[in-house]
Image 1 (tube, rainbow, N blue to C red):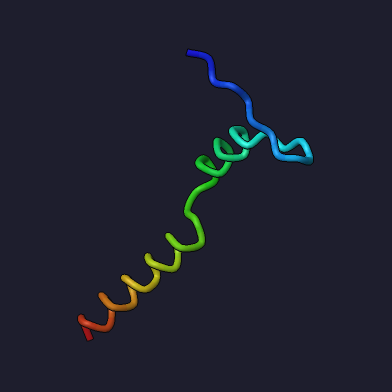
Image 2 (image 1 turned 180 degrees about the horizontal axis):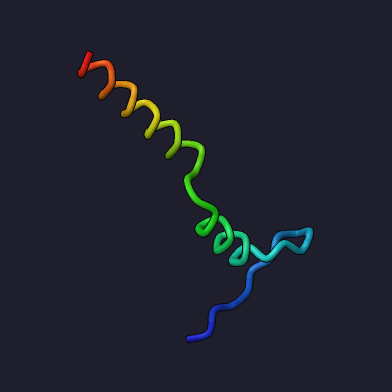
Length: 46
């Protein structure tokens, strides 16, 4: 199965951006949730 390349109007390869984003680590929301969970865990232990 061949994946057809998709581009934005200005020529950005959408699939390449998705691939690079998936390899870049935690997203903003993931970090925010992780920090909130650690804060709550710390608050419960004190």
